[in-house]
Structures are given as structure tokens and as C-alpha cells.
Image 1 (tube, rainbow, N blue to C red):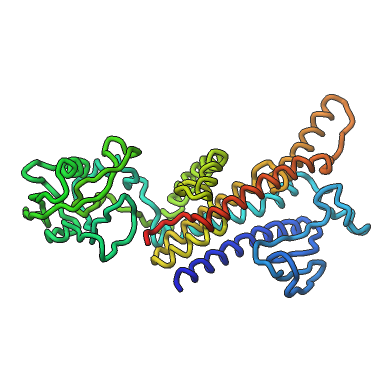
Image 2: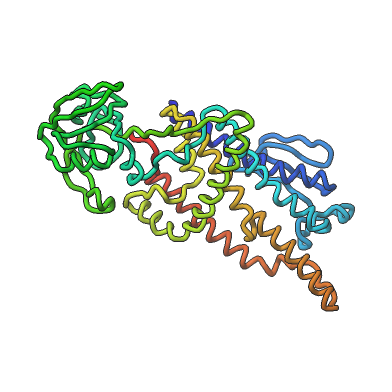
Length: 416
């Protein structure tokens, strides 16, 4: 039930975000005097609507987004009433049209920034110094966290009754113990601890010396077996190795919280990291298409492959199911930031395409004026339709591919 609740909550959060995106367009258009005739949440048949002034507001039957109708977005629009000619969008200065078209993405960025700031002063933001790679973890002191079992295969999942009990737990080791030696061989870092354990075999008895609350101690336990790749080749073939049933306990906190003022700087820093990550993710999209197809046809799903709204909602459901609300809100932040950036790409039919056309017109008019030629006027959007249809076709196919992969072979963040 909690999983379903999380899916619904995340889907609702996406719907609200997209509706606010369209509200950004509508409010800025009205502010400049453009005529907005419709603002609806959803698509398809109208469920409920009312009219206030010149704008009809309402809900439609398919809750997959929203839209607002601004009269005369292009000179080729043929649904402009004679009395509305002075208020059509394309007649307004380029800077006003830019603000109106960018308002949707600005809304997404604002939602992301506000959420990041709230997280910074409450749950905390990821600590940039926290070890996130295996190589970084191996440099940490050999301070351990116990696992309740040893999973025999090379996967991350919850323990089952069939899994062997953690040898570290059997030896009555505790979270926060610092291992100092294995079978008399000194241990300094977590990497050295792993190396010592790999030198042993499953079923062997390991004599462990440790320090707990400043006091030395010792224990013995029989090592279990799991599957892991070689330490010097993480991408290599997995094989049987001895396991103690522990993971590293990093010496630095995973998250940092801030005061209301300090949270502004932390929000800016985190947003910069998010911007870099989003740009890199966009660049990787073409090369991830084969991986999506592999996942759809029965192969392993790469966690770095793109996800659809369906996949994001499923991850939101997992987060709520596991009481990981920070993950839920981080997903919300990442999705809003990605949508904001994507909508600014200079491609029709997204908002960035309209902005690019508007500034192209402005630059071309300025250049023609300098060389003494007549202003060529507005761009004919009809001539751009083949390119627009190509973008829609490619984008639609990619969306269907990600949705199918998210249904057939979804990404999971939590073991089950």
C-alpha cells in the first residue's frame, strides 16, 4: 500500500509541476497583455471548466500534463479573431516573448531551488566529501557497519531466511568497531581489511582484533561466502570470496544540514553540481539508447539509463515504501531540473525552439538593417514543420522506449 501511495504522490507531484509550468506561461503572457484563451490541467475530454474574463480554466480527463493557449504564437496561426490581432504573441518584442516562453522552465527551476533549500535546512544535502566510489571507500579507516546476513550472490538486496547470518554479527562485533588486525596481520584502512579477507577462504576461522569506544577487543568467527569481482578489476568476472558481513562506516557524514542563511550558499553549490550532472546526462542520452533496448529485450537494466515519468513514479513509490523521503524529494528536484533544462533546448516544438526562432529573427533583422537590406520579417514556421515533425518522431519513439523499459525492466533503488 505504501508503494502505491508513493507512486500516486510522485505522479501527482509531476502533474502539479507541469501545471505550474503552464501557469508560468499564462501569467507572464497576461502580464504583458497577450491574450490567453485556455488553461487546462490534463488532456482529452473536458471534465470541468469555468470561464473568468477571456480565459477558460478547467480539468481534462487524461492527467498527463496541461496546456495554455496563447493567441497567435506564430504568424501562421489561423485561429486569430480579427479583434485580437494587436494582442497576438508574435507581435510583441522579442524580450517579452522570451520571458513568456522561458517562464515554464523558470518555474521548474524555482520548484527545484525551493525544495533544495528546504532540504538543506531540514534533512540535509549530500556531503560532497562523502566517499561515493569503491576506491574512495577503501581509503576510509576500517570502521565497520554490520549487515544481518551475507547475500551469496553479487547483488544488493534484503536478507532472506535462507541467507547465512553475518559472521561479524555472530562474533558480536558492533557498528562503529574499528578493525585493527585479521589473524594477526595489521589493518589500517577498509581497503586493507578487504585485501586481508580476500586472502582467506570461506569456512576459515578469522581472528579479529578491534577497538570499541577506545578499548581493544578480539573475537573469532567462521567466514561466509559470497560472489565478488577482483578488487583490482571491479568490472571483471565474479568469483567466490570470503565474507565477514560488514560494510565501511565512512568517517564523514553522508548529509550536511545548514542554517537558513547558509542554506542559500549550499543550495547554489548543489544546483551547480546538478546543472553539470544534467548536462552530462543529456549528452549521454544517444549512447544509452542501445542499453535501453537491451533492457527491454531481457538484458540487465543499466541504472544509468534514462527513465520516463512512469519510471520516476515507480522510484518515488519505492522511496515511500522504504521511508526514504529524502530520495523522494531528490527525485522530484532532479526531474524538475531536467525538465527545465530540456525545455530550453533550441529545438521545436519545445519552448527553447520558439526562443531560438525569436532571437534568430531579431539577429537577422539587425544584420539586414546594417547591410542596407529590407527586413525579411518573421520566420515561416510552416517551412520548419519537417524538422519539427522529425524531433517529435524521435522524441516520441524515445519516450515509448523508456516507458516500455520502465514497465518491463524497471530500475530499482532499493533491494527487495
